[in-house]
Image 1 (tube, rainbow, N blue to C red):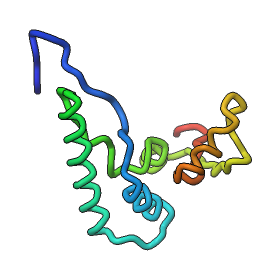
Image 2: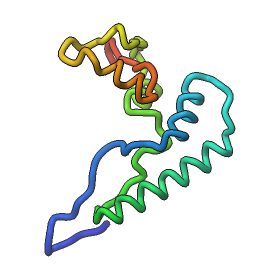
Image 3: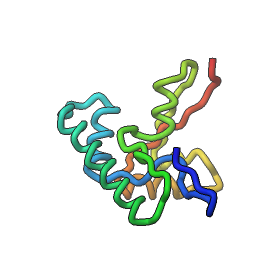
Length: 122
């Protein structure tokens, strides 16, 4: 483990932005479409290397993989916990009245629909 007695080390938590081509591969994988498993694995590795390079260039002390191989937190949670139900909301079905344009923005920027997790965890 990296330690310092001179300063507070920097890091971040969670996902980093994924390259557009990797997003396309992740979407295909998550929706059951055909995709090249070997190409996907290689692209995840190169995306992780790129993310680490950016973190090092930004002087982040403790780097991470940026969760490049995961489609997103909610998909990851849903695949690991039982008792959750999903709702695919489109741009016209904004789930949060405080952010009515969010899903439209997300769709315009190539993120497609959003899986909203509801229900209880068993």
